[in-house]
Image (cartoon, rainbow, N blue to C red; front, side, top):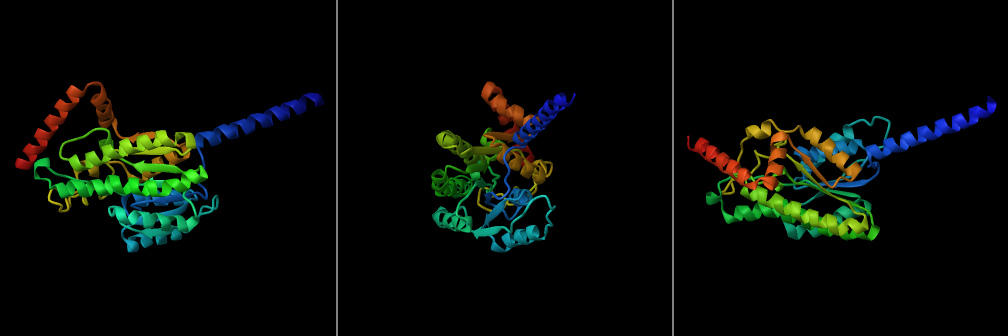
Length: 307
C-alpha cells in the first residue's frame, strides 16, 4: 500500500505541472516588465492599449503629438492602484509627430534612451479620411499616406536594428479591415492601409529567421473619435461621428485583443463582424460580385448626399 502511494503522488504532481505548462502556453507570453512602445497613445485605441498593457505590468513608452494629453494618460495610469498580483511601472513619454518623417529617427533615439531597448512596438497612430476622389486634393492623399504608412514604417525601420541585434522584439501594427478590402469614399485611408498590410507582410517574412514576430491587427469600426478627426477632400476636418463608428467595437475590447495577439505572437488578426469578414473572402473568391456590391454602395451614398 505504502509503495503504491509514492508513484501516485509523483504522477499527480506531474499531471499538475503539465496542466500549468499548457495553461501558460494557452495564455501566451507575459508582458510583465516588457518595454512596450505605443504611438497615438493620448486618445482612442492607443489610450485603451496604454491602460491594458500598464495593468499587465509592461514598461510603457507613450508617444504622441500633444505633450499635455500624454501627461494626462500618465497621471491617469499612475492613479490606478495595482491589484497586488503584479508590479506596474510609471510610463515614459516621447513627443513627436509621426507624419513628419524627418523627425522619426530622433524620436526613435529618445525611445531607446528610456530603457535601452524595445520589446514591443505598437504602431497605432493614424488618421482617417472621408471624401470623393474627384474632389480630393493630392495633398490630402499624400498627408494621409504620410501619417498612416510612411510614419509607421519609418519608426519601425528606425527601431528594428536594435531588435535584430538583440534577436528579440515584436512589431505590431494596427491596420484596418479596409487594408484588406476597399470601400467607396475612403480612397486615401484604404490605400494607406493596403500599403501597410503589404509592408508588414513582407517584414514578417524577412524577420522570420530572426525570431522577431510581426502582427497585423485589422479592426472594423471602433467607437472612437476617428471619424470626427478624419480629413475631407479639401483637408478640412470631417467633424461627424458616423453611424458605423458609433455602433462599432468598444475600444477596450480591441485593446484586450491587441494584448492577446502580443502574448500569442499572432501573425494576422481580423476583428470584425460577419458582414466585413464575408466581404474579405468575397473579394478573393468572387471579385465580380464584390465590385458590383461596392458600386451599388457608392451609388446609395451619393444619393444620400444629393438629398
